[in-house]
Structure formats: structure tokens, C-alpha cells
Amino acid sequence: MFGFSKPVVAGLAVLGLVLAIIVAGLLGIREIRSMLDAAAAGARELSDAKWTAEFEKANAQANKRIADQANATIQIQADAANRVNYASQQLEELRKRNAALPDGDTIGLSADRGRMLPD
Image (cartoon, one colour):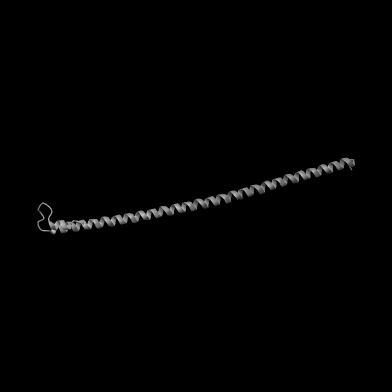
């Protein structure tokens, strides 16, 4: 052929085998690195999903507390308005009863007007 000796051919064969092993090793390392990157990306997505769910849960709880407080405030305001209306009605009734008493222009407190006072 080209006139290479057996030791040179054997050396070239070994060199070719070593180069093939190195290339296969580099390709394996690249594949392993690709798998690690994919696993890390999956872990990040899982972590992000977990924390997003936690934040949504906390926000829902906070919104429920806010809504409960708003409902309580509305109930308190309605109760206060009812009490004010009741007191206004009582005052108006008291004024009518006072005006209906005889001697409305006298000074001082008569017995009839004294009976109108609350206990």
C-alpha cells in the first residue's frame, strides 16, 4: 500500500480509537449537560408553580377577610342608621306629646311633662 510499517499502522489505529473515545466522551458530556439543564428548568417551573399557587391562596384569604370586614361594616352602618331613625322617631313622638299638653307656654316642669321623661 503506502509502505507503512506494522507498528505505525497499529499506532495510527490506537490513535484513531483514542480520538473516537474522546469524541464519544465529549458527546456524552454534552448530552448529560443537556439533561441537567432540562431537569433544572423543570425544577424551576415546578417551584414557580408552587409559589404562584401559594401567593394566589394567600391573596384569596386576604380578599375574603376584606370582604368579611366590608360586610361587617355595612351591617354596623345599617344598625347605626336604624338606631338613629328610632331615636328620631322617639324624639318626634315626645315633641308631639309635649305640644299636646295643656299650658304649653308656662315656665318650669309640670307633673305631666315630668312623666314624659325617661326613667
